[in-house]
View (cartoon, helix red, strand yellow):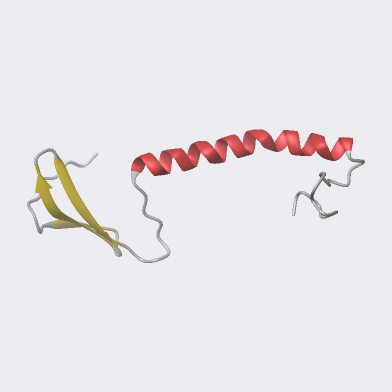
Length: 88
């Protein structure tokens, strides 16, 4: 991990398109500004971790969906799906 000291208004550049700037320092809190191209997702770490966990849970439930196809004769339809394939 690279550790840097920055003052309010100072920043750092990551790669060629991401800039992080110290916007405000107040007690234990530091407000950061992030400039990044629109196609680069930027998340707070706790949000990113929660999204990862949700994705893992969704992948873990996938075998249950495949098992449902077995019980519906391979059609992959579920009650209330209006006859649409549940996998699309």
